[in-house]
Image 1 (cartoon, rainbow, N blue to C red):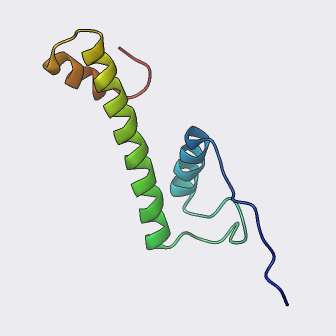
Image 2 (tube, rainbow, N blue to C red):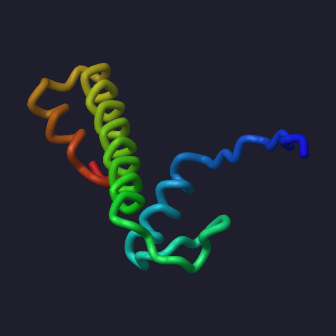
Amino acid sequence: MAKQNKERRWAIPSKRAESFADERRAKVHKHGEKEGKPLTDYEAGLRSGYLMCRSDQAGLYKYKTALGEGKSKAEAKRLSRIIGKGK
Protein backbone atom coordinates (compact mmCIF):
# COMPACT_ATOMS: atom_id res chain seq x y z
CA MET A 1 0.00 0.00 0.00
CA ALA A 2 1.46 3.37 -1.04
CA LYS A 3 1.87 6.05 1.57
CA GLN A 4 -0.59 8.86 1.06
CA ASN A 5 0.76 12.42 1.04
CA LYS A 6 -0.90 14.52 3.70
CA GLU A 7 -1.04 18.25 3.94
CA ARG A 8 0.69 19.89 6.85
CA ARG A 9 -1.68 20.84 9.64
CA TRP A 10 -1.16 24.50 10.39
CA ALA A 11 -2.87 26.81 12.84
CA ILE A 12 -2.52 30.47 13.67
CA PRO A 13 -0.02 30.46 16.57
CA SER A 14 -2.37 32.24 18.99
CA LYS A 15 -5.16 29.73 18.29
CA ARG A 16 -2.75 26.80 18.66
CA ALA A 17 -1.56 28.23 21.98
CA GLU A 18 -5.16 28.66 23.16
CA SER A 19 -5.91 25.05 22.21
CA PHE A 20 -2.76 23.77 23.95
CA ALA A 21 -3.66 25.70 27.11
CA ASP A 22 -7.17 24.21 27.06
CA GLU A 23 -5.75 20.71 26.64
CA ARG A 24 -3.31 21.24 29.52
CA ARG A 25 -6.11 22.41 31.83
CA ALA A 26 -8.38 19.50 30.89
CA LYS A 27 -5.45 17.02 30.78
CA VAL A 28 -6.95 15.30 27.70
CA HIS A 29 -6.45 15.50 23.93
CA LYS A 30 -9.08 17.66 22.23
CA HIS A 31 -8.06 17.13 18.58
CA GLY A 32 -6.89 14.40 16.26
CA GLU A 33 -6.61 10.65 16.59
CA LYS A 34 -6.13 10.70 20.38
CA GLU A 35 -9.15 12.91 21.10
CA GLY A 36 -10.54 12.17 24.57
CA LYS A 37 -7.46 10.23 25.74
CA PRO A 38 -5.43 11.61 28.67
CA LEU A 39 -2.24 13.58 28.01
CA THR A 40 0.98 11.87 29.02
CA ASP A 41 3.53 13.82 31.06
CA TYR A 42 5.65 14.12 27.91
CA GLU A 43 2.79 15.56 25.83
CA ALA A 44 1.87 18.00 28.59
CA GLY A 45 5.51 19.09 28.70
CA LEU A 46 5.55 19.71 24.95
CA ARG A 47 2.52 21.94 25.28
CA SER A 48 4.12 23.85 28.16
CA GLY A 49 7.27 24.36 26.11
CA TYR A 50 5.28 25.69 23.17
CA LEU A 51 3.38 28.10 25.42
CA MET A 52 6.60 29.35 27.03
CA CYS A 53 8.17 29.86 23.60
CA ARG A 54 5.19 31.93 22.43
CA SER A 55 5.38 34.00 25.59
CA ASP A 56 9.11 34.60 25.07
CA GLN A 57 8.55 35.70 21.46
CA ALA A 58 5.82 38.13 22.53
CA GLY A 59 8.01 39.55 25.29
CA LEU A 60 10.96 40.07 22.96
CA TYR A 61 8.71 41.81 20.43
CA LYS A 62 7.35 44.15 23.13
CA TYR A 63 10.90 44.85 24.38
CA LYS A 64 12.23 45.77 20.93
CA THR A 65 9.13 47.86 20.15
CA ALA A 66 9.55 49.83 23.39
CA LEU A 67 13.24 50.45 22.66
CA GLY A 68 12.28 51.61 19.16
CA GLU A 69 9.86 54.10 20.72
CA GLY A 70 12.76 55.60 22.68
CA LYS A 71 12.01 54.12 26.09
CA SER A 72 14.82 53.22 28.49
CA LYS A 73 16.01 49.62 28.80
CA ALA A 74 14.48 49.34 32.28
CA GLU A 75 11.10 50.62 31.06
CA ALA A 76 11.22 48.33 28.00
CA LYS A 77 11.99 45.37 30.27
CA ARG A 78 9.04 46.22 32.52
CA LEU A 79 6.68 46.52 29.54
CA SER A 80 7.90 43.25 28.00
CA ARG A 81 6.87 41.33 31.11
CA ILE A 82 3.25 42.51 31.07
CA ILE A 83 0.96 39.74 29.82
CA GLY A 84 -1.72 40.75 27.34
CA LYS A 85 -2.21 44.14 25.77
CA GLY A 86 -1.91 46.11 29.01
CA LYS A 87 0.59 48.94 29.16
